Length: 129
Image 1 (cartoon, one colour):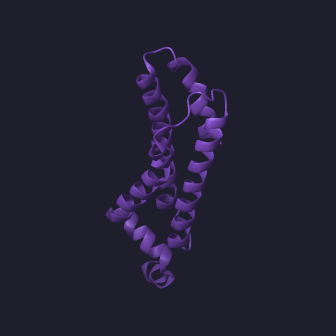
Image 2: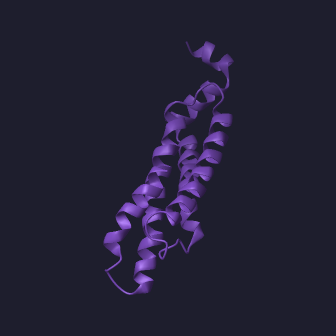
Image 3: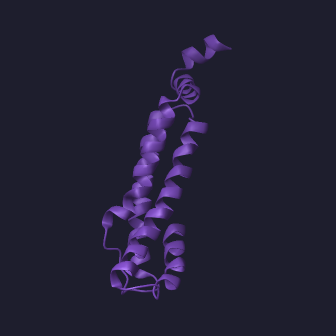
């Protein structure tokens, strides 16, 4: 919901910047940029705190991000200015895609992959202490 409100709060200043295509690009690009920031922040979370079941946590997080992206898109289209709807639907799903990429890259890195492995396998955790 915060992304939808931020998205529509930024847009009124972009309406008078250019022709219709430029305005539409700013509508879609603003949501994509907000989704990118949210995706990075959301993706870092399970890498820092993997919990006891990191795989379930990551799957739940990506599903939640997808649901949040749909809500932000639909709510943002209904807020403030209905003549500026989102035309590129893919912009709404930058958030879950970025989250998945950040988690994937983070899981490959040696310092986070070891933490994830220890969280998933308690038998290894006991050996390392």
